[in-house]
Image 1 (cartoon, rainbow, N blue to C red):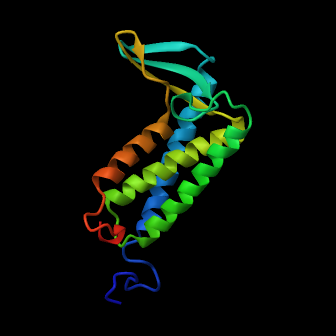
Image 2: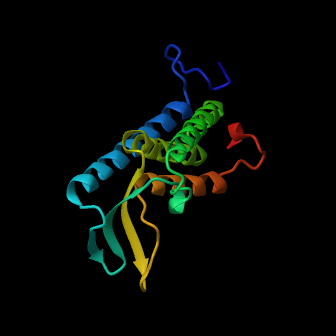
Image 3: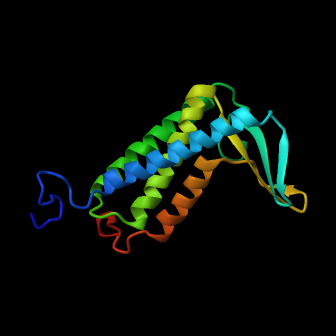
Length: 172
């Protein structure tokens, strides 16, 4: 039992990056869905509520991906992006199973998976993603986004910054 895969009590893993990652992903999904529920019940579509000189809340629906990519290809993009979210989530579970320890790399993977699944729920439920965060400067608005999008971006940054030097994710 020196490989670190089994703890002293029964068959529980000692360093369970998969369980850790799934917990983080579930927390992201819960926060994302709760925030979208709030936005749907508190904001009218297109309504902008100014909170600071650079931050608004605005309810918009995005049938596409980032920056409304493929938004005007009605129908098939919903299932295309749903399939991508499921494939990425499956790949992340496979990656997390290979990790020996809970690391920043694992957190990055989990944030990506949680964000992908949060937006997947919207696609399956509504056929599009609910966005409500509007950041702007000097009249220039960043495309509206949500908690899931933020998790994917933060997770991608961690994924890149914490890449294992040896190329083996087990060593991260």
